[in-house]
Each structure stands twice: as structure tokens, then as C-alpha cells.
Image (cartoon, rainbow, N blue to C red):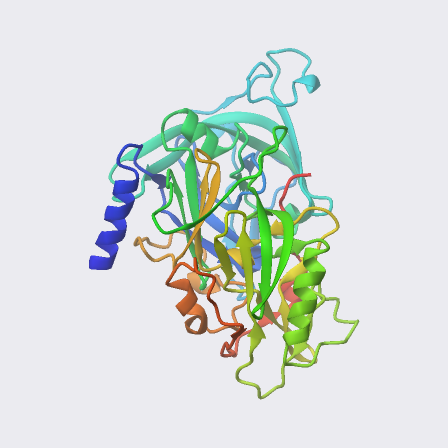
Length: 454
């Protein structure tokens, strides 16, 4: 309780001259759901009367959209344990506070598609996941929020979002089936709207716990002692893009300058060369287990290693990044354990990219990541995401919410998760225990979402 009081007091001091942080009305908790593409999800309440939607949280895109008045919507899913999740579908006619956004609005980015300024503003968002898009019209309605610390004050925010009439690709196959909550820098994103309306400071945080439980807070500007690095801003379309200056694999450091986007809407980390080859080959040179050689498994990961049937633990090389400015980012969870027909393997959770570099959710595990858009910096601090109490409000059992590397004993890595690694000191070899439960390939990798914008 003393520890919790100090945390809350510290956050109050940090926001003493700003608005009180806010979060979703149903609570600040998020859950990483393996059945829904390894993304973090939260319950959001929209409209009057309020209707709840289970949305994926995506820092790699801007627009928040919901399935809406659509003929081809995902109305429910059955999880791997035969639990049925039923989804609400947004309807303009069912909300007393809804309205369509005209083409004359400053937030209408496709005015060239309009027949007149009074026409309904259309939208279309294309994502990097193959064939994945959302199309519809922009609408306004109330997003129900509450103060984050004591949940005593309701906050109603009039926001603009997408009435998603047509979804394609991954949205019909299990990822973000009930809506995508864009958290990017564009004016149409919810963090931007909250800041412009003076409902929250222009900053927010997401926490990614090792057990799959997380938090989201709007107006959180971080805390003392966190690591920081500046954003690389593109005037045409700014993103949470940062520079990495060094990589350290298993204690071996190499200078390497490259940029990457911190994207919560991408399950795993995508790197192109030379970063991909440098990290992967150094990892491979230090790996103890025999490299998996089967070409028939169809794994998206290139560097995988066989685990014997009676093996109860294994070691793998650590991965560290040095950010622009000199602060260190220790990757708590660089691997994933997968169960194949021929036995279990563990893989380095990096996929080779053909274009953009993306730091996905697996690399953010064990941190509270602060997206400070006022100071234009990314902040991070180790956290177990239980600093602030919250209850489960998602329509699924939390036991189904697991991080990608569920075969790694959280206790084996919690030492690094309790202290911010600014000195860069970290073990060169990590020794996790192996849980009996592993990820089954057929379920897991039929879908790997990749929700950065094209």
C-alpha cells in the first residue's frame, strides 16, 4: 500500500499543473488476447445510451473505427476453449448523440471524394497487413471516460471516428474484429482530440505486462527515472518513429543506426537489413539448442531452435537496444515458444521486413511506454502493470490473455522488469523455466496482425 501511495503521489506531482489523467469508463485495464491476434484490447463505451465495444489498441494508425451498419460484420467469435464472444455493432440510429461528419469538416481527409461540402465525409484506411482495410464514413459521438486515479468523475468526450461499413483482410479473420482504436499523432486520433478539447494532456501511456495484462491512461506524461528518446517527425505524416544507435546481443555490442516505429498494433517485431541480419545472426551464434531445420512448418520466424520433450529449462541470448540519446532498452521478451507436431521450438520473435522497421508488442513487454506528444519523446520504464488497481471488464476470462512467450516463467525475467535499465547492465544469457503450456502453431500463426498504415 505504501508503494502504491508513492506511485500515485508521484503521478499527481507530475500532473499537478495539467489535467487529471483519464481512461475508459470501464477501466484502464487492457488484455493481450492470443485468440485475437496477440493484440492488446480494451472495452470502450460509445454513444447514448452507452454501448461497449472490444477494440484493439493501435499506436501505428490514427483513426478509431467501429463496425457500423455493415452487411459483412464479425458478430462473434469462439475462442480456443470454446468460449463464445458476442460483439456489438455500432449504429447511428441507435445513439441519441450521434451525427455524421460533413465533408466541410477539418478532419475530413478525403474531401476530393465529396460531391458537396454538406456530403457525408468518406474514409478509407489501408494497413500493411496484406489486403486489410476499413472503409465507411466519419461520424461523431460521445466516448465515455473517467478520471484514472479515483474513477469518481465521468468525462464525456465528443470524438470523431469511423463508421466502418466494409472491413477486409485480417479484420474478418480474427484480429480487431470489433474495432481498431487508432492512437497515432494525426488530428483525428482520440489522444489528439482529447488534447485539443483540453480534456487531457497531450500524452498517453500503455503498459504491457509479462502476463498479458496492461493499462492505458490518457494524459500520463511519465515519471522520473524513465528512459527517453526523441521522435523522428515526418511533417507529412508523423509517427512514433525513433532512432536506435546500438544493438547488444548476448553481451556483444555493435554500432548500428536505424529507425523504427513503436507500434502496439503489430504483434511481433519486424526489421529489415542490416538490423535484422545483425541481431538474428548474433543470436544464432550464441544459441545453445540445435536450430530447427524443417521447411514444412511454415513458421514466420527464421531463427527457431528445437526443444527436447523432457527439457524443463533453456537459455537464450539477451537482446538490448541503445536509443538515440544514450538510454538503454532491454528487451524482456525476445522469444516465443511454439508447439509443432514434431515437438516444441523456441524462436527469436523477429520477422524480416521488406520495408519499414517496427518495434512490436513483444519487445514492449514489461514496460510502461509513454507516448509524450507535447515534448515529442518516447518514454519507457519497467513495470508489472499492477501499480494501479483495476478490475476485469472484458467479455473474456483473463486466463485466456497471455503474452507471446507464455512458456517463459515471468519470475525468471521479473528482475529486469522491476528496475529501469538505464545503465545497460543486463545478463548476456537469460534462463527461463519452461511451462507446460505452449503456443500451438495452427491457432497462433494463422494470423499475425500488422496494423501500421500504408
